[in-house]
Image (cartoon, rainbow over all chains, first blue to last red; front, side, top):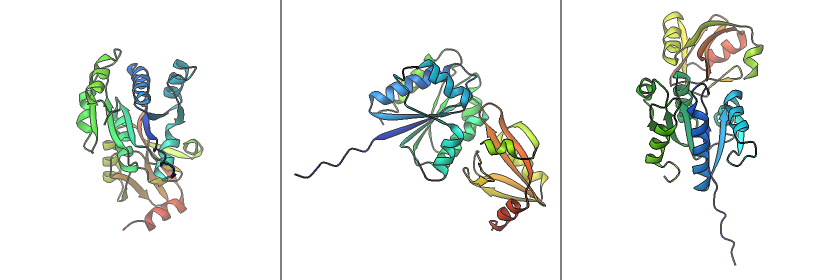
Length: 157
Length: 91
């Protein structure tokens, strides 16, 4: 009897921005949970502070899986050593837009731009590359962004 | 990108937007090349919206370096070999 081909693992990269806006950590954990429930393996890439906020928030790794340095992730994808099926970029400043554009250029992943913060509309206007924009004015309260994500259901697409 | 810390760099622009960085290179340096995000300058994969402008001024290379919390820095580094490598890639 021929073996059935193994199902390919679907992966998602969460590209964290500067953690100065509080909603990022809770939305990242929420999204990781939803992705996992949908059978998608999440990988987080951020700077040291952003990654550490998540690692300390989830000490037993109920949600978190692999966590890698952001610059290393960019290098691995640019050098074609690694890629993902979906990529979620957290954006609340100009650097976030730059990282999203970079991911759109170097990765084959379906790209989602999660835009939040006090001046989220200003950042949305800068996005002129193909991606799904999920945006809400969310700074301390993650619920507006959670609602916007739930409406798109990016784990189901 | 630990290597940036080890470079003898001069900060030309700090806490800039990607657009300001691109415009500064194009308007302040006679010679520049456009590259795509992820292109390697020294050991740095450049970040930004395409096209990303890299300036060349003699043996100096002027390139953007983006950090999540501090925006884009435009750095100026003297390196004859890297400047020559970038010029050789010019169309």
